[in-house]
Image 1 (tube, rainbow, N blue to C red):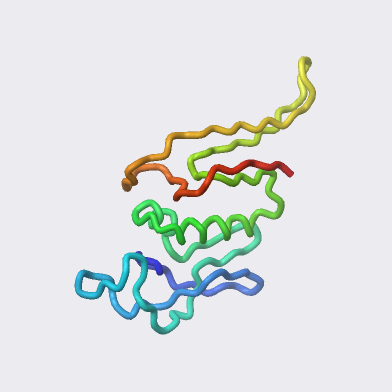
Image 2 (cartoon, rainbow, N blue to C red):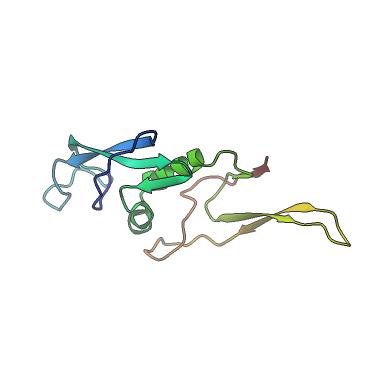
Length: 149
């Protein structure tokens, strides 16, 4: 279920597609509230949610802004999974709470050290309570780890 407006898109030949847009049977209002996260869907809009080409993703919906505004975990998972699929072989895989940031840096050799790879892991303080302008939170996920390839 996507709460905001979307663009109707069709893939070019050879593009990879993710998801399908369908019309809601009604707009969620106080008169038609079925739950906190969804409204029933009807016919297909014959359009795709995400189209992937060589090195590019096109989201037919403003996914990142919608996640910021609604904090609906499904939006985050769609973004993560499609971006992960686009990366051929990520150098860093981070699992754990969303409030841990990681940076992988390749440092060239110098007179005092050989070429090396540096991993910086920085835990930040999760925002609570969640507001429209706060950072992404962990959604209750347990702490995890990072692994390098």
